[in-house]
Amino acid sequence: MSRNSRSKSIIENAAVLFIAMAITKAVGAMLKIPLGNILGGLGMSYFSSAYSVFGPVFALTAAAVPTVLSRIIAGEVAIGKFKNVRKIRRIVLSYAAMLGFCGTILILVITVPFARIVTDAPKSIPSMLLIAPSVFFCCIAAVYRGYYEGLLNALPTAISQVVEAVVKSVLGVTFAYIVLNKTDSLSYAAAAAVLGITISEIAGMLFLFFRSFSSDGITKEELDLSPPSDSAVSLLKKFLSEAFPITLGALAINLNSLIDLLTITGSINYAVNNNRAFFLARFTYELASGVESKELGNFIYGCYTGIVASIFTLIPAMTGMLGKSALPAVAAAWERRDTTGINRNLRILFKGTFVLGLPLCLGMAAFAKPVLNLLYSAKPAEAYVCVQPLFILSLGGIALSLTGTLFSIFLAIGRADLPVKLMLTGAIIKLCLNLLLIRIPELNISGAAIATIGCYAIICVFGMICLKRLARVKIGIPVFFVKAFFNSILCIFTALIFYNYVFMGSGRVFQLALSVITGAGVYAMGTFVFDRNAFTGYFSRLQKAKK
Picture 1 (cartoon, rainbow, N blue to C red):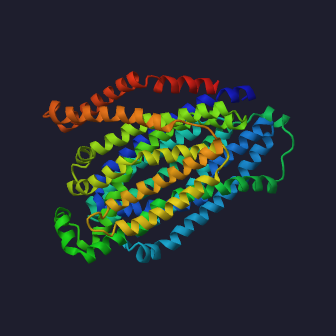
Picture 2: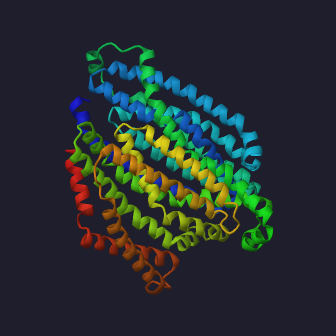
């Protein structure tokens, strides 16, 4: 592939990754929803515990690999050092394999004491043990993904992600269903679902591994023209120096889920022991469904992390995909010290976040109960527990979307330290609020939702202060917010009217779907009338920035 053809493929690669991410998010939802109906809140607590342990270990071992490797390889390709490209892939592959092996051993070693002593959830041990090998396979896959992305070939990454998502969904749900029917054990059923996830990581890694044999993306001519490679030590040092801050950032981002794992179950159990009469009256339906009072903390934790979080996080994921498309232009304008360009592209990013994020967040808040009752009709106890925390998270969810936008901007302008510092600050707030609010019986799990929103609200405030000092531009966020908020309220009001009066009796699926579609149509019309350049301006400016 020539250098010119490589440069021409940047936009195509971005589009491929965007589509792959959208597919994996959709398929991922297809796993969590049926899995929640199979395992229920208690089973999902075991499943989520495994993920919460896996997240920080993955952040320490593999999270930085594809980003850093792709950046280094792209730089080497730009100056024609193709022998360096192959050499650094070999070096980082060995390093990642060692790191992945250590990460797997770490989970295997800490699982039993962690589950028994720290989280008081011994039934999550099988799930934690079965997710451990995923760390190793994720590390290997991360190297190949970073390698191909550095060569501006996003297709192997995209296909491997889709392969993982499909295998994960099919095997995870199938294994959980079969094991639950055979053993009647939620603990083993959750572990079976986790086994499906581990197999999916193996499948994704094997695809990339065999793909590298057919073509590694470098031609013989490019190798012949390449200067001699640098020393292995200097290449590894270069990789590690760039990986360290990104690893810290990824670890900081995973702290919130770890904090929930460490605090929710214990805090709920504390509240139950100190006000048993309240919980017996408040959670009569759940206790009647077979949940023992001593397991109520695990049940509620599973409902929150396995159901509420999986539904809500789709919103910041969608706004994040929209925002990332403008980040190359932000980085380019920052390098040129182009104040006008920085201001223009930041306005694009924030406007896109509000235009897409506000109606999604407020709409989910308004329809939290119908959505949960529809998706988890087989688990009414779980749906009942989830309504209030999903409402709270959605109501303040724009803070999480804005946090993602701010962190992407900081990475684009070379300030990877700021997301780490901000997330550590937010994690301290989250920890304190979790311990304080969840123990209040009337709040219980809603306290975790309030703590999450409080955490990200503080991060947004501090993040905007940092951005203002760095960029020294006026973005006009209040104007964007007011316009999108007004149109969102109009959208939700219309959808609620149609849901409660017009489409009554048409079946729950059609009633909800038609109401949402009607509200979305009104939102699009309102945006066109009151802020008609919100979409047209976004895409026209984005195209100009790419050109």
